[in-house]
Amino acid sequence: MIEVIGLTRRFRRSVAIDDLSFTVAPGKITGFLGPNGAGKTTTMRIILGLDRPTSGRATVNGVPYRTLDKPLTQVGALLDASAVQGGRRAEQHLQWLARANGISQTRIGWLLELVGLNKAGRKRVGGFSLGMKQRLGLAAALLGDPEILLLDEPLNGLDPEGIRWMRGLLKSLAAEGRTVLVSSHLMHEMAVTADHLIVIGQGRLLADTEITQFVRPGMSLEDTFMKVIEGSAS
Amino acid sequence: MNAVAAEWIKLRTLRSTWWALGAGVLTALALTALGASTVISRWDLGQTGEHASMGIIVAVYVGVVLAQLPLGMLGTLTISSEYTSGMIHTTFVATPSRTRVLLAKASVLGGIAIAVSLLIAIPGYLYGQAVASGFDPTPLPAAAWTVVGGGTLMIVMTTLLGLAFGAIFRNGVVAISMLVVLLVLVPFVGRMLPGGEVVNRILPGYPALQLIEQVPDTMPDAAAFAVLGTWAVAPLLIAVLANKRVT
Image (cartoon, rainbow over the protein chains, first blue to last red):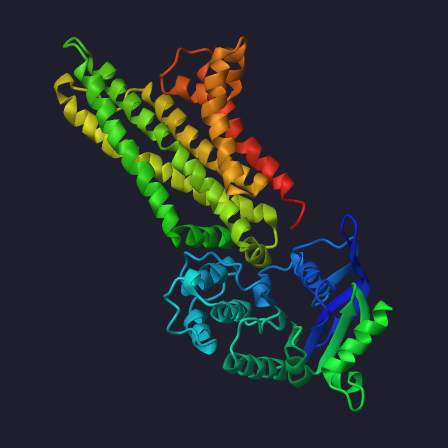
């Protein structure tokens, strides 16, 4: 479970997040939607303790992320898949991460296979395509078998087969009772993947509802999303 | 300990680490051999065994100190390259305590600096002993420990200073420039300015050179060790405080 309570993040001149509150429940895929600059990434960074809120708080399993011992065993995160050092082999990247949280190295081979990188495990990450880096990032997120997953635009760079594969994997992870928060701007994809939606615009909460209740009759998710965003701007 | 082990894996799985260490060790070894041979060739026959041994150890630790810049750069890159690639966020997601990450990096780098000093000092020492065997050098005179301690502390200090600058400036070019300015440029300029000698005494270079007997003594050895130790620890503490602020 992820809880965001009255979260506000001001930068020097602008307000990135404005009194945002929501809860992400286990057992389903929650889509985190909003236009560019809406504050999705900032919210995720604050949940992970990478940024401090101006006011309010965010907790995972009831406590702030920074107080977790061996956080990877509770929360898996994929923020920016290309933020890896290119000189390392894929398996070496997972090795240091596993070691940092006392996670068994035996999971690495299995995970590389799960994300379809078993042949590329000994290759250097610098030569990876964005899609391959997303797969590696997902393996890193799953390293500690966490109950909670935070994935920021995990579909970027994936080919159609990869998108389908990711959708199936996320659904099975949610079906196992995990909390899955996925940000994306691909509306068609979210329409067939997400069970629940949290929509934000200009840092404020615009909708927090089951996807079936969000989509207006006779309209696509994309059309509804555009209407909601336009409605909030005016 | 998990964080220390993870940092060690990170460091050893980058080829640039081995290039930096290899270049540092090989250059230093070559210069040590050259230096020792030159020094020994100038001795007259009346040289005592103890003096001979000291001469060898001093030459060896001049070599160790010459390897400090590649190690300081390695210290910087260990953290600045993570900021550049953005991987630092993954590091902080795995180990949320910034202080723990920095101290883990410092432990690994400190260990590597000591290992490098021994990789240069031991072969250099054995080579010097072999070349000077005619003078019957004693194995390790008591005065040698000041040289060993001073040279080792200097290379550890530079490595940790590089790390601290990398953590403070978060930019490899800026941090390495600062390191070179502090270790090379400021002492050089300082010597030419009035009052420069006083300033030089509290910079890291002069105390180290005094301990390895390359410059006249201007302070007690204990004070020289204290200045060097402060340069090893204080910038790292500033980096820890600077990293309390996030992102």
